[in-house]
Length: 118
Image (tube, rainbow, N blue to C red; front, side):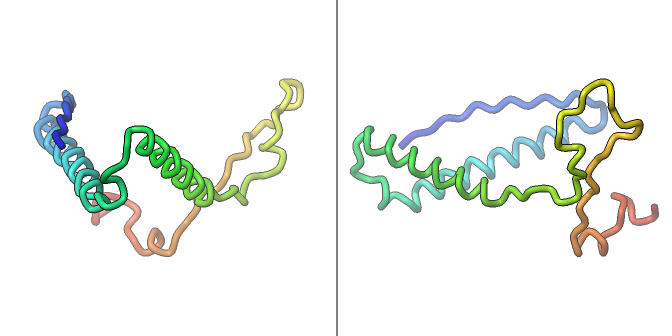
């Protein structure tokens, strides 16, 4: 199998351009490398399949992925029921109701800033 990927990045901010573009290129390379490693590791599942079999297999994997993603979506609990309805323009609240930012145990321990001194 031969696979070519063309990735072009552009981050035109003086002083950050080189580092950010290198980080993006490295991240994309790591993602693609992981995908290729997984494809090779799963060779027993797809080797010998016809193109039609591969398309059916892809469809099944896509369906399973969508089910997993849908299971991970959690309904927001902190949203006021009024915010879920489409408001008419005549009775808009003066202050919009927004959901609260969820907190996790790790976020309470971690500093609130990128810099330790702030």
